[in-house]
Image (cartoon, rainbow, N blue to C red; front, side):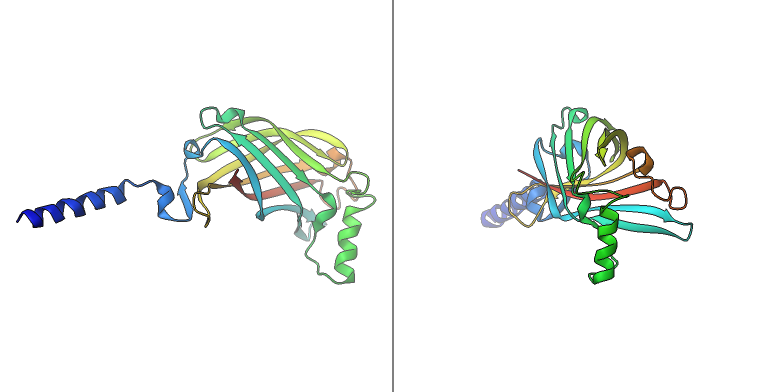
Length: 214
């Protein structure tokens, strides 16, 4: 009987330990969707899981999409003061990709949009976003205010942000987090007004990003 009770107590202790174990032991993936559970530290963009996609109305016929393939970003965060988070983003305008193919036509169109009359990437090789204020909202929502510099012009923009969660990658002990964000700008505000209004002035930017804690 004593041996039976000992085994029962041992199994009970093991079950309790598993139930109360840290979420990180559960394996890779999101362990929490609460911003307060994001550990303090410096986070760097996982470039293999990041996308900045623009959408613009083309002559009323379509909501045309394009993306930028070269993006760098980082942020510093303290769950005790989320409003003080600092975010920095840098994009290479020459990396614009219209997904029209890798043939001569597709590459020529990408270069056209990166060139004269449009983004003029050779003259303005970097577009940047630097946060000025973070405004936590209800649940996973929030707003990030900051300065966007594009085509040599700096303007304030506001990103509507969703915190997708924090957890771990396949690397033991790692911390990974992810966000979705959307904002709308007027390209004419940044001196890119070619064919407005035939091609819409408003550009919607949809952002999906993952970061790794360093």
